[in-house]
View 1: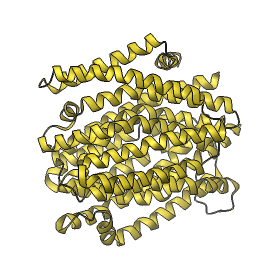
View 2: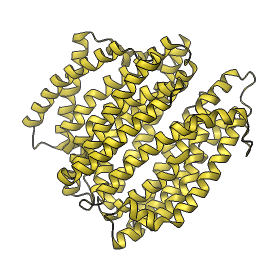
View 3: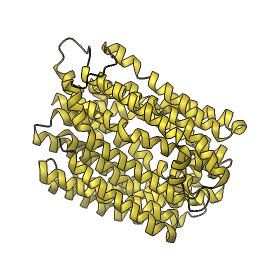
View 4: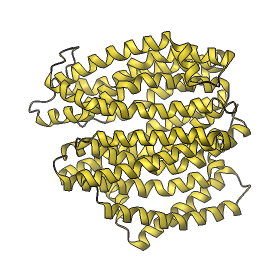
Length: 509
């Protein structure tokens, strides 16, 4: 019972802290949109960022995820506080060396690689992309170090500093865009990205000092802890690389569409992904170590997965409807100022509508995949990720020439929905880690309530068409959210208790 309460309290704490970082991230996007709009220069910056993510995706994310289960078990066995994790020392050293060399190689071959990942860019835009790529690659090692140090702190239950890391980063990015952007153009944003990444790394040092953790460079590749970490890396490596490949393909195909399409897709995804980042991803920070600790107890794994899915579906289902029905006013409220004109807003709203179904799929997939990793199954999620990637790539190629950026967004949503279902089925069949009956009932109730609440929201949108964006979005949100909550109460759905349980945990803390 104590473990259940601690996970709930940690989830509330992480959610609150993540909200602060997310607010600054939203302000960052608003400033960037106002200064740069949705044009060629910001498209080039996003492609350059994508190239940097290739390097990161090859090892950093996979290594950080692999560190948590091993370090969490070591932390649970410590009697006199945290001193040193030798396996982590080796993992950190190897990651820094590999990523440093990878960034250098990518910088040298930025020209041909850029031509490959953005075939629609020509002339000055292609040259700008190469220049920005060489700048942002400098952040590769900084971001990887941040993720690894944060993983150690999280394994010891210290989640505050990792949850706040976005604050200094976003403040620096806001200053780079707002103060230096008008004078130095998009280059100011790339430099700000590197400086902000350094600030994120520095923010991970206080919790390690408080724990007394000693980190030393080491290349003792035979260390038992590192060998266990290394065994988890390959499948996670493939999984993280697949995610980056999806983004790269989206942007490669987007580069062949109208100018600003890549930026519109990026802003649309950020708006859709905001609730998942704020609520569901923050839940998984304490949930993943809890799942790892309960990996030998199928009943507890099922309980934790069921709770995670209940929160995900209950929170995200009405939000998906609100995003789809109020896409235009929400985009106008979020980005409609400065250089971000009506055409940019219309393109971004289209992306939001077609990305909206991906929100609930992404949240559910993260819950079940985290459970699979915790019980030691990394092959299943990787195979599903490969299949989802193929759906996304084929969808991009087939749909983009016909439907433009709407086709790219729809392909992403379809791939994520399929991945969520397949991962859940594998977790149930292989590990009995998912109560299939309860999950089906949860989805069924959500679909029923979504149909009723969505119809009401659509009617409100028609009645108030032409009103101020804030009024229109607020009315749609109130209608959809209110009816959805009322429906939960009328149906006496078990998940109606989830928000209250989390609030009670917060009060107890």
